[in-house]
Length: 339
Image (cartoon, rainbow, N blue to C red; front, top):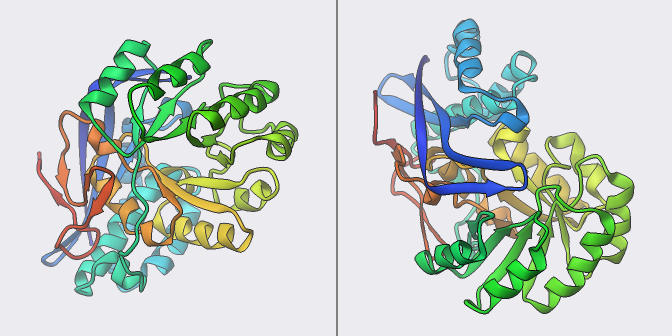
């Protein structure tokens, strides 16, 4: 295989704010693994919270090129196991390589990825559309700009209840709340009572990631389901979430790609946890990877590319929350920009 590295700056349509800060662009690295006439693509985006930078991604890929560029005779699962010891300290990069190899492998097989997994794209969950923290007026304007059946609302402000109460006046859509670790235990339980009345489906990661004692109290007393995000990064975290959360939100970049994500979904289901896969703000490369897992999921958050001014790829499309797969094999991705 031949490794090709491309970097992009993904510009956002609007400044995007969560409880940890605001971003207007997202540096992204696209990995291409090429063999004969076939190519597979994967993505890793920069994330200061997880100390992940595109410059560091590039440096590590150049250093480990010979490890990566082996013949594509292994299954994606075998390739992930082969790569893991070399990239276990960089899950974002491992994710990009896992996506690219899985895409390449299934294209060579003449299969769409969900076909390789023996999944059927029927009765898929709808994706939410995310409204970042802003003035109430601007949050309402964003909803009107993008009418949608499900909104994820980012919170973690001093007037969270006021925000949701006002937004509810402008839509009948389902609300999901993501506090991004911005609340305490009492605040979460109190908010769950009020938000249940306002048509909220669940609350995502209200507490700090390591506050397991608080998570148990919230789990036992919340009026709404609580979904783990920052508390469930990798496979070893799934078991910890049992009896502390009602479900988990898996991010491919945080867990190391499609291969471990699929195992995490199966483990969560065996424990009676609801399953969700989310996204970072990323291009259609990463979003298309998420889409192929949706037949296994209860919920999905794959709106990352919809927030962009300048997507760099085509592939899976999201229309009014509904997932439309590409006709191409593999993940169904084509790069629009090849610089």
